[in-house]
Length: 387
Image (cartoon, rainbow, N blue to C red; front, side, top):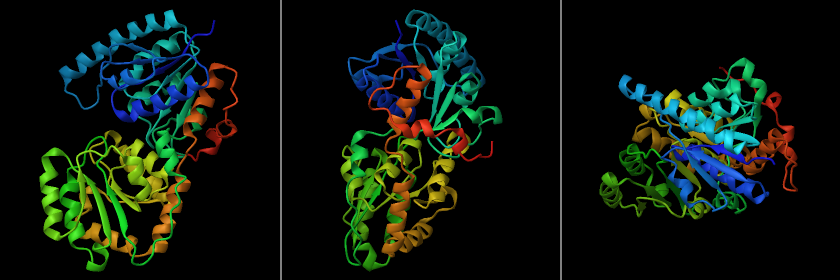
């Protein structure tokens, strides 16, 4: 009897969200699916009862002191033997790792037993955990055509699938974007991503204050603000006379994306995937402390396609942001071109491409939902990037 398809993910939302999307897709195709996560993987507790959730020990190493690193190595060591026992009992058809150190023990245990392994990389830089595991993988699903820090020997394993997004975001793609009239309101959406973005609390209101009056009065601004800066942001917009919708959290992001003409945001993997699938251009301010500076690589990929501008945090002040906003929002044809480019950069069928790849590696009979697009997209179609 064929064992389940086993997914290994945990930690941050960037790893968890695509794993949940794949789990749903595989369950819909009639497969048995299990999830191996660490104690932080609480997002899966609300998943369908069909998903078998298993927990093992795991811990991150990067950015920690010597004592914390030693403890983390110990946790991973214990997790590896827990994963070995789990793999032996379940005998999975394939294991899919989503990066982060929570996936390491399970992928290593699967490789040791010659179980097929697929890795999924959300960013334009291969993450440290995936770099550690790449040599043991049979295929590496990537979200960008150019991915940095991939060894020459592992490039043949790359398959461009894209990064899965929520179905509600996919539906935004179908919403018509009408040409922007010279005097029409302009919806601008400011979000902080999973790491938050306190910098936007000062930067964006100050930039809005510098805009020409005829442009500023057309803005319909929505901005996410953390608790610590919420009152500050509200007061800043009140002072400059802008009626901004300031929220601590947006629980209606798909609806806001439908209305948005331009975003100001970080460039984490999930944010970039959602923006491009929805087909919305952005001013991307990469989180400057991200490991391996992967947010800059993500942003650069969309900017190269024409769907975004990259604004490094260290060199972007209010005057710079105001100048860029004036240039883009004051030119409807430029905004329309960026919108089209952002849409072209999106991969709306990413979850189906990824599910197809997993079925192939597991040697499972594809269902009627299988897409030929993933089968045709291999490492040979991905342009070589600087390792």
